Image (cartoon, rainbow, N blue to C red; front, top):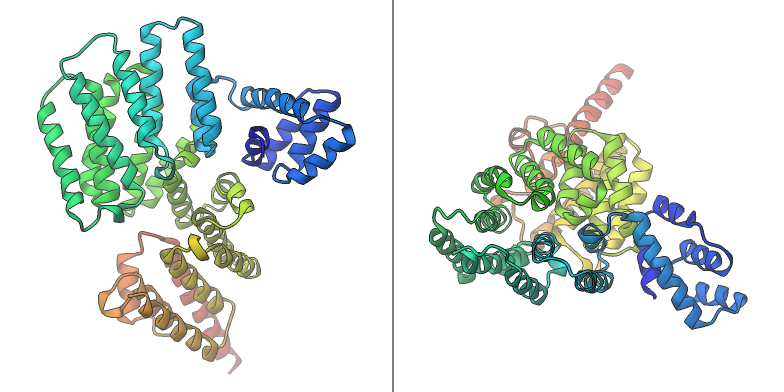
Length: 474
């Protein structure tokens, strides 16, 4: 697969339509449309090129030219914005090629030390923001070195700032999988190292160092420690520190700070307030911001489902998950299909929900299997069967089979947690809406996936309507 075909494969259908309108002629037009039509099928492209009698060398040169024109089409500002676009799309080879191109351009144009410094500072913050699946410590260290060498006005705490950045890199690299350091001495070591660096920094007026150490604490407490109250304190501090940062950096960082605010509101169960921020950032920055921060894309949809904001949820699903669903199996694809299933069920479209659920189960297999997603899918399946009017014998068997499965996975009723949802659901379809499980879940809610409470309410209302109709017949 060439870089151009790989690039096209990440585009949404609407984006491909825009690319297809690129003004080119003759064989270039034929190559463009062949790739846009089916970017993942190399055999199709080879057959089309054979018909046109196009040599591999000519095809390569045309695709290289088309790739650059595609970059200019979708990111006309270029520079860091283009690197960000490529990083968000998961186009890592493109990212490295473009980074080398931009660095050569800085050399060719004899960029000033100030221009180089701003470039590497913005690049550094971009790398801190990427998914941990693509986090590259060696690249971070290389950029840190270049950033340090281009400092224009030295500060006594520059060396300390570099150490803080290295510590931040470690926190970011583990935040996507907290279990890497959970319940081990290393988790304590990370916190102690951050604390020591913050103490050493003291009341320094090195604003970037202050921003990056607070950034590290905010990520640590939110993701690794799972303490939204402590993380919130650092997010508030970050928002206040923005005004001291260079303008270009402030512009880059503001959306990230706003997303952190929304994330904390989500973790506190304030879904409507979080949704307002997510919608605001979506309107300002588009779906690319949420592709960059995948867990915020996920939380955005969960907040939208909780608020029954059908239109915005479907729009984010279409723009934020469509390419992933097209490619198939991955944890993110499973989550996206689960959200789509929940939306169908919330709308009362049970047939579509059933088809979507089957697809979600298909994605969540093998090396891509995620237990918590499987648990949520099983809850959705039970809710779907109840709302579709399945008989009690079938529901009881499905419930018993599900509880046995959860038990094998280490989830016990005595331990509480997610399993309480299943007992609340069982009691509701059995007509016992005053059970301790139902009352507990209604009182406490379910912060990880709040739409589940809507499903329970829907089951309660459906049960009441069926009972009323049955009484009416008598």
